[in-house]
Amino acid sequence: MVKQQIAAPIFGVNLLARKAAVALLAAIATVLTISTAHAQTLTVLHTFSGEPDGMEPVAGVTMGAAGSLYGTTYYGGTNGLGLVYKLAHRGSGWVLSPLYSFQGGHDGQAPIGGVTIGSDGNLYGATSRGGPHGAGTVYKLSPPASVCKAFLCPWTETLLYQFTGGADGGTPNAAPIFDSAGNLYGTAATGGTGNNGVVFKLTPSGSGWTESVLYSFTGSPDGDGPVSAVTFDDNGNLYGTTVEGGPAGAGTVYQLTPSGSGWTEKVLYAFQGPNDGALPYAGVVLDPDGNLYGATFYEGARNGGSIFELMPSNGNWIFSVLYSPDLSGLGGADATLLRRFDGTLFGTFLTGGDIQSCSGYGCGSVFQLSPSNGGWVYTSLYEFTDGLDGGNPEGALILNEAGSLYGTTTGSLGGNGSVFEITP
Image: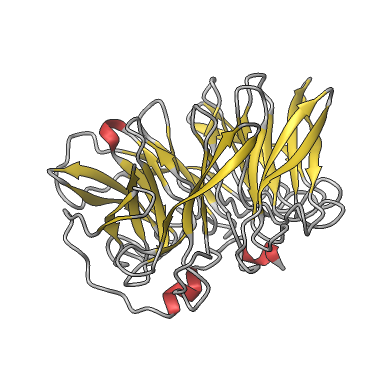
C-alpha cells in the first residue's frame, strides 16, 4: 500500500543497500562536469558521505542569500537520523556545512521535505518522524548570533509543533509555507479524524505556536495521504494533492477556500488511471492565469505517470495530459514541477532513460516541457548514469537568475546522494 511508503524515500533503501559508503570528499570541489547533446552542462557540487554531511537528500534545495543552497538529508549526520545543511560558494567551488543533526528524541528525525527560508532569516521545516509521539515535528533553525567561519557551525533548533498522530495529523512530508501574516501552512500525510491526513495551520501565539486543522481528509471522495506542500493563489485559496484516495483510489487534486471561520474543500480532479496517471506525489504549481500544473508517479498512457494541466472554466476545471513518459511502469515524476516566467516547465524523473544503469531500470533524468504553437515540446536535459554524476533525482528543482537549475539525487557513486547544477 502506497501510504506505508510515505514516510521513506521511494528508492532510498535500495540505493543504500547496493552501494558502500565513500569517504567524505573535500569540502571545496567541483566533482564532475559533463556536457550533453542538448548543450547542458551538469556539475556535481557535493557528494554526500553519510557522516557528518548526511545521506539521501530527498527534497531538493532552497536558495538563500548570495546563492547559497539549503537542504535536508533523510539519513546520516552525526546521529544517522538526518540533518539540515548549507552549501555556499567558496572560490571556484562549494563548501558544505552541516547546520543541525537530528537526535531522534523530541526534536524529530528523518526530514523528507526541505526547508523554507523565513523573512527573519531562519529556516523552517518538518520531520516525518520523531517527537514525543513519534509522529513528526515542525521546527525552526536559527543561525548563531555571531559570524562563524568553521566547517561545523551548528544552528539552534526551536520546536514549533510536535504532532500526536491523532486528529492533529502526523508524518509531515513537506516543509510548511508562509502567508503574508507570518502564519505557516502545511500537510501531514497521516492522522486526522480518519487517519487520511490533514492540512494544517500554525499561528504564532505569544512565545509559541498554535496548530489548527484546516481540513481532515476522509479517503473518498476527497483523497488520502497529502504528502506535498500546499500553494496559495492570489485570492488566498490553497491547492494541493493527495497520493491516494478519491473514487478510484488513485489520488486527487484539491482546493481549500477560506469560508467564514473555516475552510471549504473542493476536489478539482480525481485520478482514474491508467491513461490520466495515478499517485500524484508532486504538488501543483500555478501560472498567472490560475492554471495548475502537476505530475503523477505511476500509470499514464505509457506507464511512466503523466504531466498534467488543470484549467479553470466557468466554475469547473478542465484536465489535460501534457506529456506521458515511457518509463516501463517504474515510476516517473514525484517532485513538484518548476515553472519559469515564460511558461516552461522543468522536472525530474526518478527512473528511466537510455542509460540502463541503476539495476537496469535507468537512473532518471531532468527534463523540460516548453509551450509551442498550442502544444508542448519535451526535451531531456540530462540523463544520470549513477556514477560520479549521481542517479535517481527525487527532489524538486530550483532556478537562479542566470538560468541554472539546481537539484539533488538520492544515488551517487557511494550510494548517499549528491547536489547538482545544470547550466545551459
